[in-house]
Length: 182
Length: 216
Image (cartoon, rainbow over all chains, first blue to last red; front, side, top):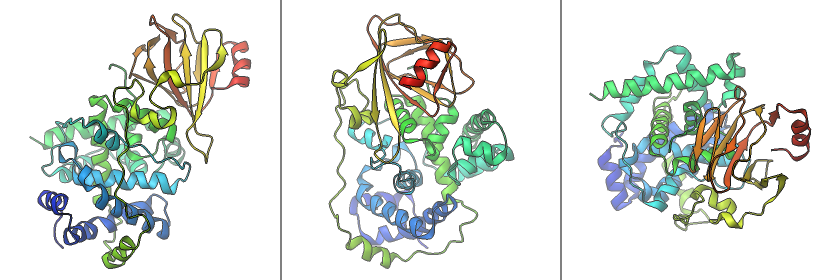
């Protein structure tokens, strides 16, 4: 399988051809669908959201700015927003994401800690270094799509403990990322 | 900008598990807050890593040609329209779809002496809404706690409570552990917008009776 790297994304942004899009599809489509099914979507819903996400990638590729984060995180936020809009069905209003607002303002703020070099590997390593209890809370939030209150119920702990584990996890993630980037 | 949402709120924003009302206020804050933008971006990288390294992903390939057929036959082939916002407005772009770009256009109603209120429904499929308050200088909101979470974003003016001072763009992030008595500390009216997932609980019985009628 061909790799989705910075050069391929840049080429796809410039040329927008089906061949590069297929590489992106083959890499991300199974991952998006798998994450959606773990967050409670059934097969048909996961397929619909995955398809919508891939269509958005094609249509919005000009909006992706590598200075603001990795391509994977951009794809993740599109899939997440589609999940919010379609799966919860609590609103007919589309979710106004910060990326849309930033495009409108053209406010180019690059992020020091989020460099593109091997970001996924660094984040993966940083997650692995988290204590088990903190990692569990992060997984329940990001993978299983549970609110803080639902996590508290699932783990039978006070919501204040959920919040403090999330804060600690973030601080440790940030410290680990800094160390890993040296 | 000095007052930010709690780190756990920003992480939940990245994971997409905040309610529409809460996430709308967080987006409004981070529009102009690089500090929180960086935290959210790290959260997004975390979510992306979870997606990329999902241990339960069996790696089953998806059919690109089947997707391509659907893609080519989709009804709406128009390119995505970028939303136009008034970037010189004191209303954050994320709130403009609900109240427009001019705070003077908000339709206020009486809430209490010195305090006006406006509720804006932000979803037609649930009871999700935002409450806007316009409070006169030096006016106090009676001491209260919360039965759930509460985010308050200041749009104009400033208020102060036991936890600090909040000016335009700042967010006060309170939960069941917070008891406070906010007071407006600006020379002009303070306009703020509130999202809650539980009612306020006032220390005074009279204020509680009133709250049960007017509800925030």
